[in-house]
Length: 118
Image (cartoon, rainbow, N blue to C red; front, side, top):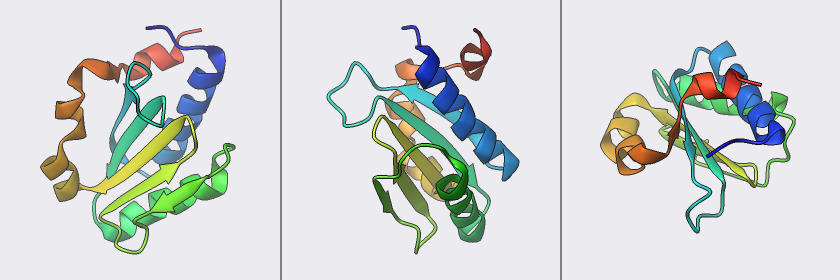
């Protein structure tokens, strides 16, 4: 499925902010075909709870979208930032492996190279 310019721009912005904070294993899942509240999931992990919180806080500060809700910042094991069409999940490494959202939604991964294309 193709992405419109608005979605590409927003997803690239999110990925860039995560990369700046040295977030690891960034992936994007296209959830538009499901009756889920968001159109896209962006997944990333930090190396420890402090790193997870730092990534999430940086997204809150720098991403141009309006944050509707945030969950999990206190624990730092799995933070979810709800930007309406975009849900950003930032995990601790072990928590990400345990829940394996990529495995659950493997057919919906958007190659990051597709975001770069005009």
